[in-house]
Structures are given as C-alpha cells and as structure tokens.
Length: 198
Image 1 (cartoon, rainbow, N blue to C red):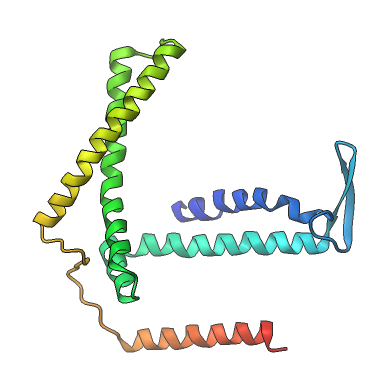
Image 2: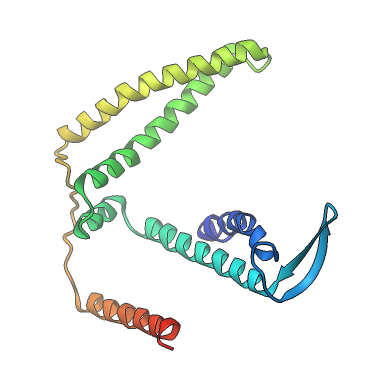
C-alpha cells in the first residue's frame, strides 16, 4: 500500500494536471471526440490529445514506480556502490551520500526548533512578530546546518569514509544476472524493432 500510495496516486494525478492542455484541439489537433465551452471559448477534446496525455501519465507513473521500487528494495550503501560501478563520478555519489545522511538530521533540527518556538511563544502572535520569528528561525537554521554539515563529514571520515561507499557485500555476477541482462536486452530490441522497424 505504501508503494502504491507513493507512485500510483499523487504522481500520476500531478502529471495528469500538467498535461491537461494537451487534450484540447488548440494544442493537439486531430479528430474531435466531443466539444465544450470554457468561459465562452469553444474547445474540443481530440483523440490524439487523449492518447498523448495517457501515454505521458503512464510513462511518468512507470518511471517513478521503478525509482521508488529501487529505493525500497535496495540498501542505500549498496545503491551508491552500484552507481560507482556504473561509472557515476565520485563527487556526485559522495554528495548524494552526504545529503542522505544529513537530511534526516536537518529535519530533526527543524522539528526541534518549531517545538521550542511553539512552547515559548504559543500560537497567538501577531503578523509582525511572526515574521521576525520566521526570519530568526531561518538564520539560526542556516548557521546550525552549516556547522552540522562539517560535523557530519568529520564523523564520516573518522569512521573510515574515504569518498567510496563500502559495504559488507561484494558484488559478483551470477548466471541469473546474465540471464536477466539478456532478457532485458532482447525486450529492448523487440520494442525498438516494433516502434522503428516498420
């Protein structure tokens, strides 16, 4: 349910709203399915526009599903190590690893700051004082996050981090991996042949 809620509810709905103009004849001309008026302006929904919109929404949902499924089924360190195996630059992988470790601490600091302000001030404050509190919170959060980032990096170095993600599991290619790779390559070639071969 967690996977479906993250991939097949919010993301497709957002992409559907983004692609709504493409279903009308002013953006995608074609055979009209039905006509309507919006604020007195005549519009028509076209068959080609609906196909284009459906294809876009399904592509977005499929790509987001693969990314979320990969993140849910693969440990973070193994995912970073796999990125390095594919030749992703070290600075990108190191930045991604730092961000992953730092963002949880950052969210915890935000929650603690909000709780501290709410317990000292309460909810009944004016707009002027509220803006001052927001500005102070942003400045304080920036200073704390700047010092926290160096502390996180120092802690990672003290635990043996040298820019390369290390895991207890060594990557080894098995026969099942080669079979999966061959099936994926054949499927890709079949799709390309069906779309561009004729």
